Amino acid sequence: MSGGKSVTEGLARHGAGARGFGIDHQRTPPRRVTRAGASVIEAIFCFETARGRCVGVLRLIDGECWTLLTALDEIKGFEESIGDRRPHGESYSRDFHGPNWLDKRKTAAEYADRDPAVLIVGGGHAGLSIAARLKALNVDALIVDRHARVGDNWRKR
Image (tube, rainbow, N blue to C red; front, side):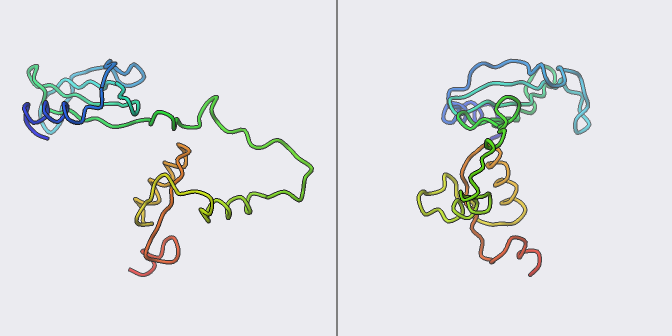
């Protein structure tokens, strides 16, 4: 979107209840910098919507908005498995007849008992990157590609 009216209308339509705006104190504080040859005040901020936690970058020239960039940083209900939420593995068991890691992986890949939450079309660099990111967020995703193996799009180019 470009222009005040367009941005305002877009936020009204797609704002998803954005609230809790504030300076992100874990990042560089607001400062005067040069971007694209222009002297601007740049601030990194955080906020949230009904769906997730977000970050943004605001650049001002003479007190007016020059650039506003936003990104979804974390999806609510699918928080990253870091810190206290990090998985600690299964407890040790002497049951050597239960499914091992490979058995569990094959069962999960079959999708016999469920549908994936996300379908990723294309197993190239971008598809694999988003799949890895979703896996870190514990979002079940399936990659489909016209080639048989990961990396075939590079091998066969």
